[in-house]
Image (cartoon, rainbow, N blue to C red):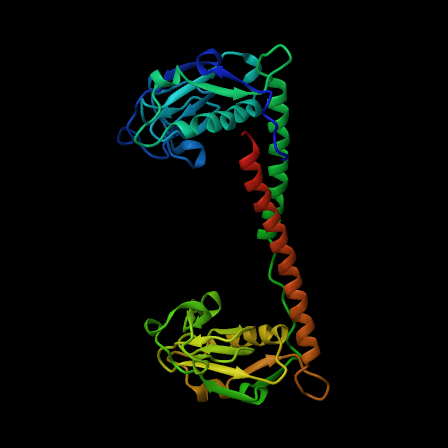
Length: 360
């Protein structure tokens, strides 16, 4: 959504735009959760303020078709049907002009109210009915100076359509299934035969180093094993990157692109090195290692166990690892993931921009 020019907008008194009333106050203890279809609305920020759905007598209800302001939290929601409110500090706004009562226009008004009122209140200085009657909201206007309900509705309708399209993209990403690879013709290879060197990293205690820029790799199963960044005391502290590290606690394997410092409990952190190993091939090998090591061990992995473990890989007609196929498979996987991340990043950036630009 493009930046909205508000230079020609003007302020309107809330009391001129809305019939305002405090809601009833019905405690949650007096209701049975999930006993009916009536929204029980609070001042919470999520789920349109709805905490649960209940059954309650008509005299406990407030009329719907209103904007509800959480009196203590300054949250805004649109309640399209009659509802039960938890607090008499909540304020219901009923538009006086019939042209302002469409869903799209009400949602635009919520954005405008939030932009106009949020800077004025805090938890310790919450809105009240008395103060609400003294407040204004800035809105677009027609040539004769009245609120431009048509423009508001059209603008929010476009916004909703864009968000629906973005949600469709996100839902599609969430439904992407893992690609199944036929491994029936792959061969089994012993890890020791695939690497030039398998060695144990030198253990270094994090407390003896200052914070810095060198990755600190530990027996963690997350974030590529990196739990922080430290400043080496000398070149002897650094383990050379371009290797695969294997966590001997749970068998997780990671590609370490850069030089790093290591700390590992138990049997230590193992480093697997092969001349000419690149990121694409290493990531494929990490996946194969994870698949082979995770289900097979019930105690700390030893160097001997890792060396003797067999993994399945594509093979050539001669029975050797097919490194070209391995690299091409991983390139394709990374390309798909990059495309998905780009789509998700675009969606999130667009949504953040739109939230900040609906009203200024």
